[in-house]
Length: 398
Image 1 (cartoon, rainbow, N blue to C red):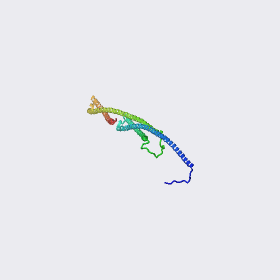
Image 2: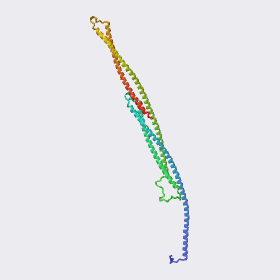
Image 3: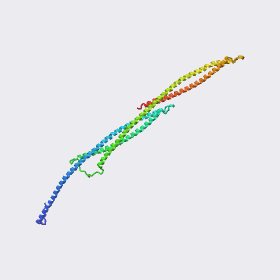
Image 4: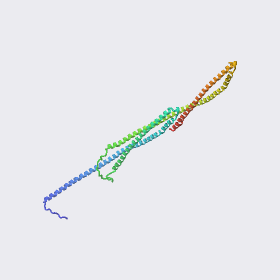
């Protein structure tokens, strides 16, 4: 233990008392300061504790309110999302209906074209631009136009579905962000001063420069909802248009199909009637040919039958012209023989003339027979095309 250092200076008693009084004064001052500081510290601790508790309580309330706000917009987004999803399903159904309707026009179009090709095989006078051809061409043009309309409408539906899916994607993205924010704020709301998950952060407590205002936040979700709603309404309008297009095009095709079938029925009936009339005429011509052939045979027989009497009469004249001298008398017998020869020759001339006329008439009848048979064949060909080829094919249309 170190020995006390003796001061070489000696103090007076008064100095000693003064020194002690100064120590007392300094101790009193420091103690007063300490007491005041303790009082202030206690007041500050109490005040700050109240403020901290109040602020933390306010933060908790704001977190709860924020959760309610997020939940509200999440609910609105979810409602619009469900509506968009339903609209997509409805539009997909219309798209399928359009694809089916478009596919169903292929066969009717092919039938119309095939019928026109069949009818190109008509011949002679039956190659006519009739109501059937007019209606078939109209049917082809109509179906071609309808196919173009259906294809255009189908493309519009595909684009509409794409737009709906785009809006659905942004709704889902917004909902996902809201869900994540809810989880974070729920976790924050669950924290308290004794929570095991709390920690000090090395980052400074500042507002992120990339953050948005509450108004911007609401506007963002509201705009997503409004855009989705607008697209959904546009889609609903398009669905109505598609329904009208499907109905009107189906009705137009059916009406024109009925018109074509009616034209075919009328034309077939007309062809059958004409063919029947031609067959009746052919039957009469055939009967007349038979009668004319018999007539020619009879005329030829009559001409042949006149040869004997003519020979007899001419032989008699030749013999009587050989009478000698005064016996060459112009007697009644002579006059009658001369008359008989002229009469037979006149009869032969008339018979030959009639025979020639009959032969010409027979040739004319034969020409008519061939013409009628050809025309009947033409009508049979046309009937086969219209009734057995075209109408049998068209019966497959529903």
